[in-house]
Image (tube, rainbow, N blue to C red):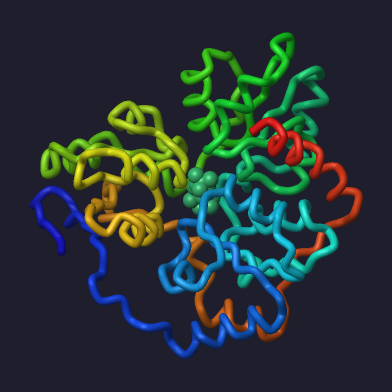
Amino acid sequence: MSVTSKESPPLQIFRHNESPSDLSAEQKEIVRLKEESNAVILCHNYQIDPIQQIADYVGDSLGLARQAAETDADVIVFCGVHFMAETAKILNPGKKVLLPDLDAGCSLSDSCPADKLADYKEKNPGLYVVAYVNCSAAVKALSDVICTSGNAKQIVDQVPQDREILFVPDQNLGQWVIGQTGRPMRLWPGSCYAHVLFTKESIERCRIEYPDAPVVAHPECVETVRDLADEVCSTEKMVSYCRESSANSFIILTEAGMMHRLTRELPDKSFVAGPTGHCACNDCRFMKMNTLPKLLSCLKGQSPEITLDDTLIEQAKLPIERMLEWS
Ligand code: 13P
Ligand code: SF4
């Protein structure tokens, strides 16, 4: 259902589909091949619904990293973006990690090239580098500890007090963490191209139509948007926040794939996709590169595969393991 307004694009409201269809032949074949190769499908909350439906686990970056660390499958098929699959490989160097489309990158990760970070560290010695998991393996290898949106506050709180922190690559998440922890940090000037598209004006317009719906925002949104939110949290926490809230409708400020998970798990509630200045909802073009045909072909051919240099794996593993220990 959609509600139209003269000034802005129609809002998109997501509700549970009362008559879920059976799995398609393509989905069934994916499940069969997955079982045949003793593979596990790990899927981020932003993936398309048909992929979420057949995944073994659907979650946020933190949950996916934990699942990757614990799985006893021989093959990990990662339905998400490149840095997430790399994290799974770093935690499982002996396993095959597949990503249906190797070009599924991340603008935020790209905003912090490893050579620039190495150069900055050399010119500013002594910094304690906290890296948001949305970064390359090479950036992880230059970092002291990794965090996700789900544990960023908890991680920063545990950094030794006598160390000055450099937070990379997301300045918006970093700024939010400064507010949460009271800890000053240097911020790398990176951002997510999709989350910065939400504007104060687009959300204020949406609120006029849904005055009673709490606004739930991802911390990658800009400060003027986060300031309008009732809750700022990771994609996983969005599910528990909406479950525990007495409200029936919510305005969700993150990538639109999130709506599938929310409507599936909370069928009695409805969700308005936060509009941007020019669009009714917000898709990440990288997350949407994974499709059912690519997933099928990836399982059939056991490719494309994530490969990383052994030394890089060793160096990048330390800050990830520290994160898992600290959270
Ligand atoms: P979450 O860890 O909250 O799922 O976020 C990942 C991400 O890429 C957000 O854009
Ligand atoms: Fe990267 Fe943004 Fe896409 Fe998340 S939504 S994967 S941060 S580009």
